[in-house]
Length: 290
Image 1 (cartoon, one colour):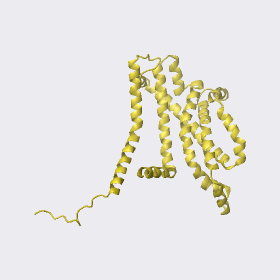
Image 2: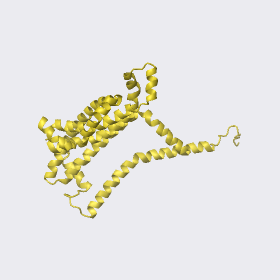
Image 3: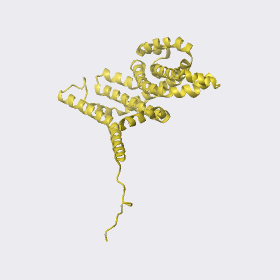
Image 4: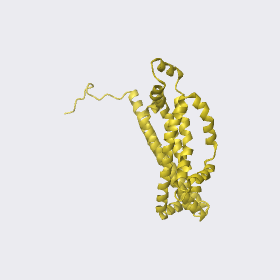
């Protein structure tokens, strides 16, 4: 006996608006998958093109080694690379942690005081303009060859972006909002703690993503000049005997460590200041829905 499907029990056909929403959701999912895969596609494509060019033009290894030669060098020297990479990572993280502490404190002080802003900013700009490689010999005279000059160089080179961004975030609190809070009885410390610091957090994490990458630059610079351990020291030893694949292996490992620390900073930023990016995401959805 055939089933009697009445119009009241038949499933309703999706409306045009529902179909449009489903299409936008599917497009958003495809876009997210593409965004996740795109960096890997570009990296693999770059290394493949690099390999093809080196083999096609028969470029000598002491000029530009192919990725296959670099990987072979990594396998051969994996223990020294691991040991020296750990040394570079530790010195960088120590210098970066010091830059976060002192940069955050000084940024809050400069951003909340006009006198400090005008008094210290020229000095900070002048100090940041000095090439850090010129400071390393002075650090060697003061502290000797070893880990300390690398830590201080990483601190010095990553300190300025944190100070500038935190000071900017606190200084951009609207004067009208300050006046209203003062009228309600808020003290200057309350304004900084409850309004200024939350306002500065997106700037702070933006500076961290810059500072962690340049901190590795500071460590490598110091290790190439005044260290007996680290990726920079290993690269100098390798270049002295024309082991260019090992030099490139050190560069790639340094880049990988920088990317990992950048991803960690982004993950902390998303969990801490996700509210600052929510409006941008909603704006993108609204534009997609237009």
